[in-house]
Image (tube, rainbow, N blue to C red; front, side):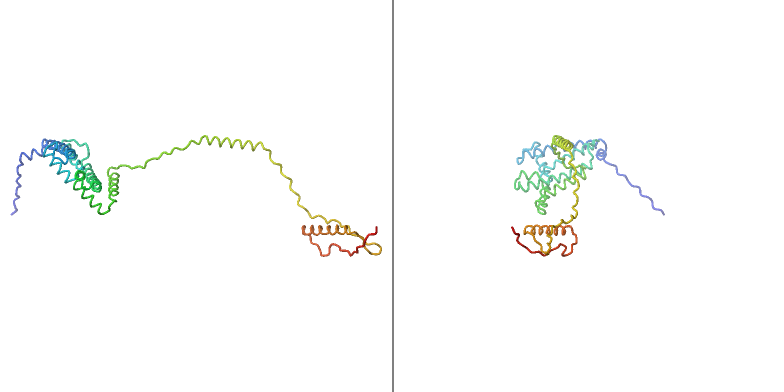
Length: 284
């Protein structure tokens, strides 16, 4: 036989749950979140101002609540918590000034980042100061100590790099290099002077007459050897001459030989006659 289907019994919801899920309950929750976020922000501000005394503006409740939130979470960056509560309250009331999901993750990121940077700065230069220790919180102190233990002074570089990457890839912030405007000197006067000098040089060059072209020099040709006055023999075959005449003939022969060598003319040996002669003293 087929089994009978068991009917599911629907439990009646209570009026409190129905009211919580209703539109009126949603608005009431939104108002409560708004009120609590304002209360927490005022209590945290009073805690930073009046610490280490317990004179909180909102009494003992405000003091202990703000102390627990600040010291046990993100320090001064804990202001992100009332900010998120305030936005969520507006969202329950039907108002969405900012996209909730993106705002939630961005706020949490910057809370952790700010508390870590503050924890590193105050942990290195304000160590032992109770007042400065509240600005970082437990989370900031822990992250800063671990980073300093791993990379020492490179912690600040790491924090700066993370912030730049998040701004560029999440918030789409464009980081541009600064433009350097270098004022160039006014060169118009120098250009005018150069133009005037060039014009004057052109005018001077046109006024100077062109140099006359020199006639091509005639290439020296081989000159004919000069005739040498050789002494003539007398009837008896004797040659009579003076010493001066003989030196003059010797010079003429030397000049003729040098001219022949320069001209490159081929001369046979013994081409110049060398007659035999006798030197006789001339009778007065």
